[in-house]
Image (cartoon, rainbow, N blue to C red; front, top):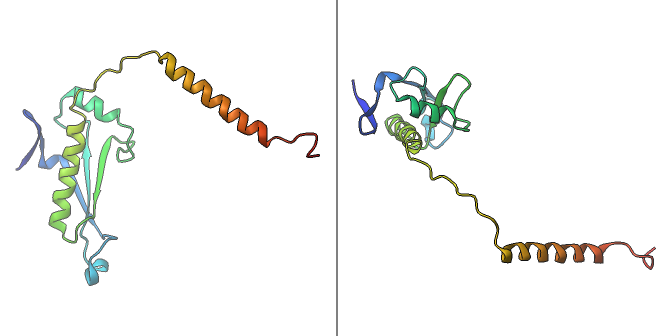
Amino acid sequence: MPAYEVIPGVLIDDHELIERFVRSSGPGGQNVNKVSTAVELRFAIAPSRLPEWLKTRLFALRDRRLTNDGELVIEAQRFRTLERNRADARERLLALIRGQTVERKKRVATAPTRASQRRRVDAKKARAGVKRLRARTEIDE
């Protein structure tokens, strides 16, 4: 039973992945209407063996690939063959999970500089001037 390493010490077993094969909408010639080469890969986050901190980050994702049931759904149909689409789906799932293992830098709030404030006010005044020129005057009426 193969396992995929997300980061050192964190593995996803093959039995945790659910695959469904569907017809692809992409290239394929005569096979496109007969052979199911597209892959729909599902990974349930809650029952997986991932650490809790990683599960929390995955659940916090604002991603259309995350279902209400807590499953990540990856659809792969880039290639003409089933094998390449399966490999592509697994790689994309691992890349998505690995992306959540990176510690995000905390944003340090800074005040806008005096020059940037001045540029902002000048831009607003210029825009107001353009609008003033477009406004109807007593002569136009």
